[in-house]
Amino acid sequence: MNERILRLQALLRERGIDAAALMPGPNLYYFTGLRMEVTERPVLLFVPSRGTPFAWGPAFEAERLREAAGRVYTWGEVEGPLPSLLEALRREGLAGVGAAVPVVAVEYRVMRVLEFELLRASAGAVNHVDAGPLCARLRSVKDAAEVERLEGAARLCDAGMAAAAEAIRPGASEAQVAAWVKAALERLGHAGDCHIMVASGPRSAVPHAGTSDRVMQDGELCWVDLVVYHEGYVGDITRTFPVGTVGAEARAIFDAVLQAQALGRAAARPGITGAQLDRLVRDHLEARGYGPCFTHRTGHGIGLEVHEEPYIVGSNDAPLEAGNVFTVEPGVYVPGLGGVRIEDDVLLVPGGARVLTRYPQNTFGGA
Image 1 (cartoon, rainbow, N blue to C red):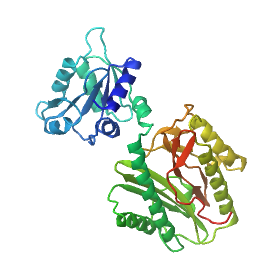
Image 2: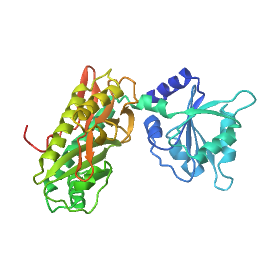
Image 3: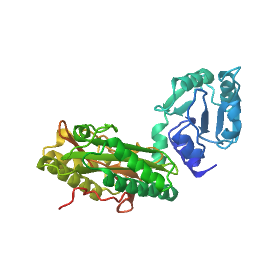
Image 4: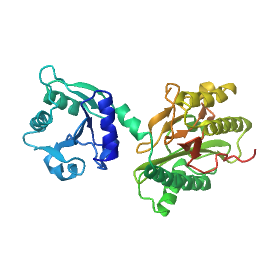
């Protein structure tokens, strides 16, 4: 078994959990290297607290499932999934018998009612807990190979943002800017997923506005939020640009966000909590009267997913640790005028932090 599975099993034993049941998706990939998507046909990987994992799924996926587990239980499309899952859980000692009700960790945010009801019907009785925090605890600390992939994603983010800067001008549309960025990434040989949001003028006051055909006008704000996947790992960057020459109010907002984001990057280090880092950044904007306009958390972890632990938010009192990778992205959004967001990816290292995304934050120029 690989080291990641062993660490998960140690957490299961520590918490008195008999097994974890993982769905196709990021956690399955993280622990096994198997990439599968959720379909109408249910698939589960069971990681017992002791012993080797076993998989369960449709018969035609048996060979793929053997990549993830030594033992595979399959179901046919005529008899359906329930009989084989019942047999698997009984053989593996996870079917509730009498007072011996197993405790199974399931992914609350991922598992569908379909899988949960099959699990409950097959086990006879089951006590369930959330597997999400257990998996997040392990996934949130990146190893050297993961950091290398995140660095590669960050380089693509930098290149994409440079292309955006070339394309943003009065008369250009948001869609044209997004297309220019995508083409630039393709010229670099990037054929993976990327998500590009371009929002200008009043639309930039909506934090997740998406991209439209709107044509930019002189004096407006325009932000570009770019997510790029590199070998399965995410880079996430946002920059705000002036369209032509902007007024004093827009410049004041930009300067406040620029300063707040710099404070957040400088304060990021092992030991500070997500709540403390969020408060530091938020205090700076509140002191300048922009508190009500900063409507989201300061940041989120990145890795296999664009939003994962650790979250830089007021409710996260857990100390951050070396190996965490997360965004620092304060934003101020003023309806009718526009919005400013500046986002970088930050890796915590012993004693401090290293910013992975390198495109200049000060896109307005000047002091």
